[in-house]
Image 1: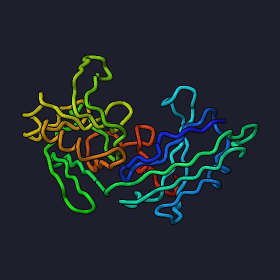
Image 2: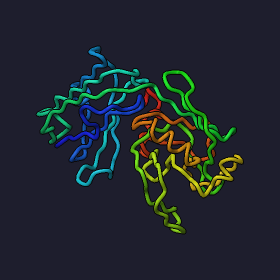
Image 3: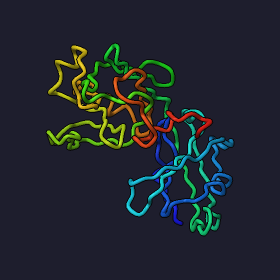
Length: 252
C-alpha cells in the first residue's frame, strides 16, 4: 500500500491545517501507522492521532487520513512529521511500501468568525481583531453549514453551480474554499444590497463586498480557521471538507 500526502515541504499553513495522507488501498488497521508516526513542533514532541475516512479526492487512493493535535497548532512554529511506515502492517495481508517526512511552518493564529446574528465576519490574528466586514450567508432553502471550517484552497476565479442545476456561473472571483461541495468565502458584487442589509441570500457561500473579499483573500491562508457558531444550516462534518475540528477529541 502506497501513501502520499497533500501537505508539501516548505509551505506555511494556518493553525487549523491537518496533515492529510492518501492510501492506495483500503487500510485494515491503522495501529502500526499511529504508533510509528512522530510529530514535533519546534523540536518538541506533539501528541496527536490519525482519523481515517473513505475518499474520492484522488483517483486510485480510496482512503484519506488526517493527523491533527488535540488543539490548533501553535502559531509561528515549525512542524516536522516523520512517518516511517515502509514495511509496517496495514492489517491482514497489507503492508506499507514507503516512508515519508514533512517539514512545514505554521503562520499567525488567524481565526475568522462568521456571526449569522450580526451578519458579519470578524478576523483576529494572534488574538487581536484585524478586520470586520458585512456578509450574506445562505438563503433559507440553501443554508450555510455551522461549525468549524478550514480554508482548503484559494482560487482567483471559479465556476459555480447549484445542486439542482438551475444555474451555472463562471467568473466568481476571490474564492477561498471551505467545503468540497462548494462553500466559499468570495466576492459577490451582484449581492451588495443584501450584504449591506444583513439579508441571507446566497447558495450557501459567504458573500463579501468585493473590496472586503480582496482584503481577506490577500490576508488569509490555507489552513486558517473559519468558525460559523450560529449559521442556519446543518452541522459541518469531517467529510464535508477539513472538518476535523468538529470531531470530539475522544472519538478522534
